[in-house]
Image 1 (tube, rainbow, N blue to C red):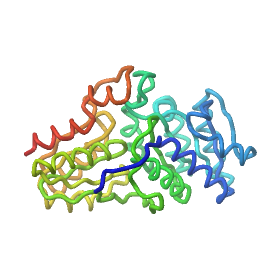
Image 2 (image 1 turned 135 degrees about the horizontal axis):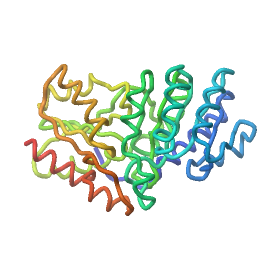
Image 3 (image 1 turned 180 degrees about the horizontal axis):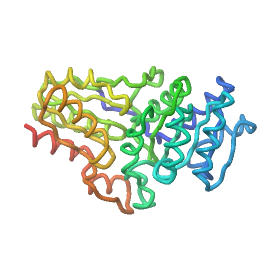
Amino acid sequence: MDLTYTEKKDTRSGFGDGLTELGRTNPNVVALCADLIGSLKMDQFIKENPERFFQIGIAEANMMCIAAGLTIGGKIPFTGTFAEFSTARVYDQIRQSIAYSNKNVKIAASHAGLTLGEDGATHQTLEDIGLMKMLPGMVVINPCDYNQTKAATIAVAEYEGPVYLRFGRPAVPVFTPADQKFEIGKGILMNEGTDVTIVATGHLVWESLVAAAELEKEGISCEVINIHTIKPLDEEIILNSVKKTGKIVTAEEHNILGGLGESVARVLAQKLPTKQAFVAVNDTFGESGTPSDLMKKYGIDSTAVIEKVKSLL
């Protein structure tokens, strides 16, 4: 894959632009926010659809219950706040009022992972994928760039059922097509290879592609798969790749416990036992710092991917 690119954009802007487009095409889409309109990039949607927006304030649990209620009248509510406040703070409300009742709520969670940066450990959620994937019926999506986040936002409005849509704060390279068709539960082959499979999600897809390009210079051929949907997981694309390479590295901006790596390990343990290495935060909280410094310190950048690949070889 050609790694030259011309721009960086934050994935939260992909959500905001996707929501704006939905506002123009789907009259049932409504939005709720917990006092973070600017951070969630909801401004344009609100400008165009003031009667379809609800500012709940810093009352996230209330927001989830209101969203659940709105679905009864046929609305498609998108809730907006940081990932930490979209999950741990409101887990009871999501479990009982949304997941258990199979309500058609789209939980839009921004500022996920370490790359929230300087706001520090209290706001850097590294447990959210695990929390949400354990809820029966909950779809969990973690797109990799601006274009994919916009496409995912539009796609989940067409899906009937609860969805957790996770995205981030910083600007990251835009490397997937603007006109892509987003298919829930279908992984994407980003780079073909024969020596090792790298299965990545979110920001770590780009880091994995960078790592693969560097390893290619050393004669190591890496197959890179973008798993934007962690639940339901595309088992077929993973198993087909591992049958060819015999080794796998999983890469994610999440705790090593409960994330993509464990989901992949379960599939491999049941269907094709395979040697696996994990690129993830190793069971710890984060700290305040720049996104790049934090990714380096906690071992979730391209250098960490390279090291894990070499450890398998």
